Image (cartoon, rainbow, N blue to C red; front, top):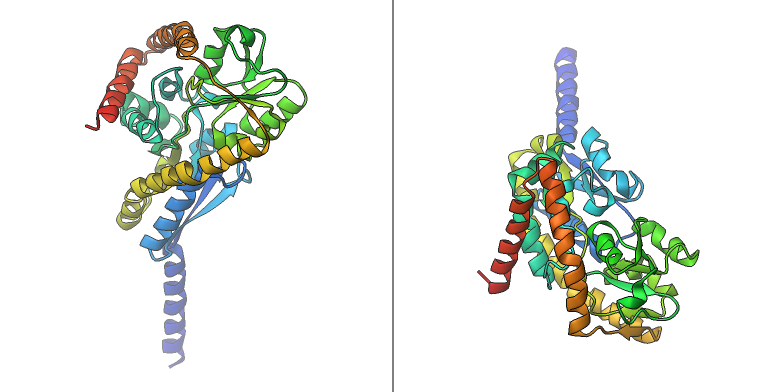
Length: 339
């Protein structure tokens, strides 16, 4: 009898451990604080938990797991299972993604940003690029076009940008360089201090980031329609962790991407932009509006040279630069036509 009881207890303990082991918890590394930029991550965590009955959960950490510039490194070594990265923070680590950060691509909506990002993410050269870091691209973080907030006198002409110290990364930084500005690639978390201390005169961000990182609190003007481009910040997962998921868990994760992105876009367009416009009014921020001729001049100066330099650099590295650029153009054309 004792042996039977002992066996039953052992079996129940073993079963309990098995049940506990069956649950999957992922650590997710992002930065800053919860904001529009992370709403799709919060949403996909909610959806995955719901679809798996709580057997697959995500612990989202805002800066507690890694620096934002080292998230790709953390994914590579398996320090966490999922992370948000920005291509412009480390161009050498993810060169293929930087095609999406070229200036004046012509993307005008968040839906178009999703379309071109998804097309690029599916290209074999891009997937191979990220596999070097044991990373799989899961979904985009569609960002509006960047614009500047600045202190002091507004830079209302391209000529006035000469010597302007601007926080702008990647292709955006190079675009501003063509009009005589001096780009500085400090991270988003460092932008406020850089502006406060005078390291930069202006900061290029999407509206949500100006709000979240408080650069708007120091601003006296905002370029409402310069729209030189944006950054690309996908969500990636560790390949080993992804492969270790059960079929049901993997289906829950992959099957929640579109819904999470839809939620993100609705949140951004409705809540974030409403708050942004209200903030501009409350702080009496001057809206600098450039003429079509000024924007065309900026595009002519920046887009062509940046594109050709990028393609040459990629080709020299054995990456199909022209093919990736053409893919963006074709995907954008399809998105604009609704096909």
